[in-house]
Length: 96
Image (cartoon, rainbow, N blue to C red; front, side):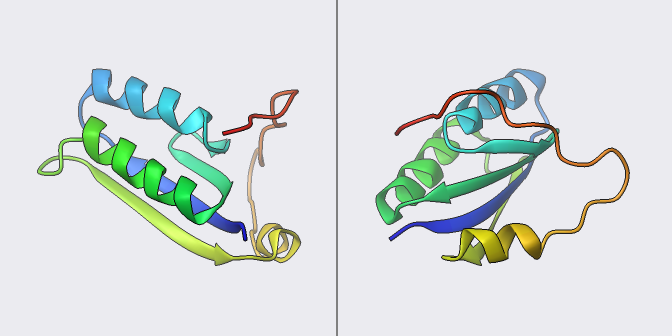
């Protein structure tokens, strides 16, 4: 079963920030500069967390993972955007 997550991060070092952003692109769609929406199986959530732990500095950086539930439509509808809005997802699917 897949669940929807909002992943937000604050990475203090520019090199680590680029690595985290590149890493996150494999797991979800970017909604803002440091905010990603992901739909993941349980094992992919574990892989995501382990990968982020390897990249980030746990004494300086922060990552927030919010579980939005298993209903993707409801998770998207529960989100409210103000301003420029969500960028269009890149074409193609990413399969992990």
